[in-house]
Length: 128
View 1 (tube, one colour):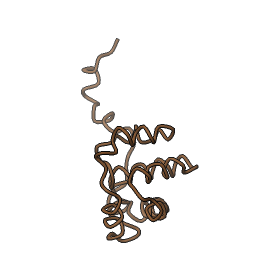
View 2 (cartoon, helix red, strand yellow):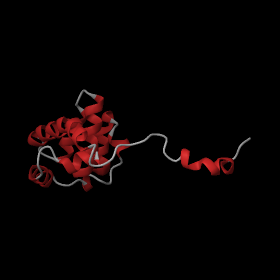
View 3 (tube, helix red, strand yellow):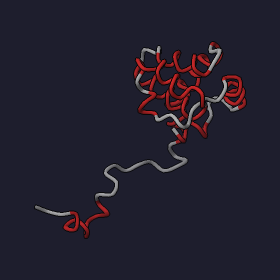
View 4 (tube, one colour):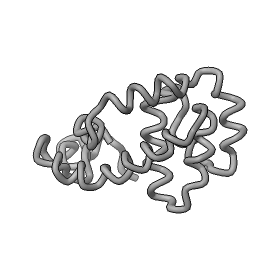
């Protein structure tokens, strides 16, 4: 049986299994990919009276990909302490609110902060 030490001389080949793109070369593609997410978040922010309600609105989004991306942005704006893996559980949105909601940023602050950024927000797109 081989051990990790057996791979030491070629470890540099195994550190990253996939190559990535250079920044800022990826920025244009990131904006194209994530602008619809930010547009959707803006719509949800305008109809959400609380941060807890915003999470419930996100949980109702039918597209799994869009919902997960919205959860990622929710985490950035509303609840950095809530793990994304937990936020992905749409059927548990109310339970998540009960467990983490006391630490959410208030919706007026979320709305003001979000609206103060350009749309699309290139910085956020790059982070996502």
